[in-house]
Length: 88
Image (cartoon, rainbow, N blue to C red; front, top):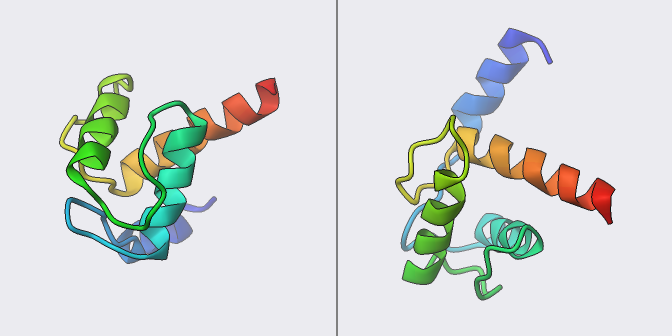
């Protein structure tokens, strides 16, 4: 991916945090469950989801453990998801 495309992609990514709702939250919930950070799959960013995002972030050296799903957290989740999927 070119730096320009990467920059555009990052600028257009809407960070998700406590209180967020919708299909992107649901997508992240499915990813979290697949990588064994269990949450309800209801499209609502709950306190439990925030805690599980923080727990995931704490496992990754590149991330700040703040409970917010920003583009960096999403990239790291995608890497872990892809690795786990290959292992199955």
